[in-house]
Image (cartoon, rainbow, N blue to C red; front, side, top):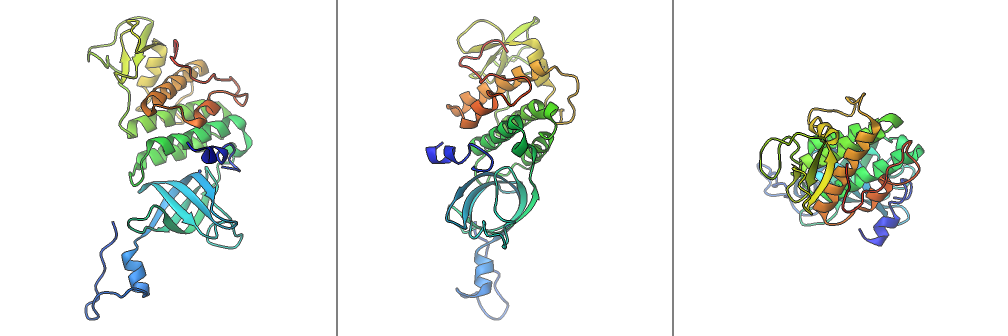
Length: 302
């Protein structure tokens, strides 16, 4: 991530094909400069969105990166967004959810946002340091793993649920685990945790197994260089995540959740080939009740 972007995401407060012409029956094709031309050649998009990045464009305007439910990641220019009286609820802040109206111009990198109706602020990420860092990491994951114009409604719903669950300090780490798993699943990188990812055979019996980013999942603990040793209880937790929700975990020990989080974060880092800036914030710092260490390379026993 560019230094300018990193500077803009250190806190929540500082952080982020054309439609066919509808030809009238008698009057021929619409003409450039007319309202019909504008509405027909530049399709309007209305969608629910979470802001994952923003940058100041001018004193009153912003450029933003939005994770939308039906259109994937959408980058746009919100002219006059920071004016108190306007169509943008006083500005678009990172880790807020709202409904957008945008004009998507074919061939243009930025859509033109015409309206933002704020629906959810997610106050926990603004009042709790641990929730703040978890939320920023969630936004960074979407930024890194989801492409523009690639819709993932299930992942959007999971993101909304995970951000909402951050309000309960006891669910912060579980919410982060749930979101990491959803990102991997929706992006096509879901790890194999029910059988040996290398051989396809049943997992070995024993207290420890291994995880290979190269193989894409759990493997036998042979000591080879591509393998990270993991506890069986970590694998057993991962095996439940397909059916789990952000509200379904009540009994799993926090230490097990921490280890599973660190394992998935290390796997994501290997997929990307780099460490997302917010990953280290999420796994280090004094904001959590039980501080997590940043994933190391290679990851030791999880």
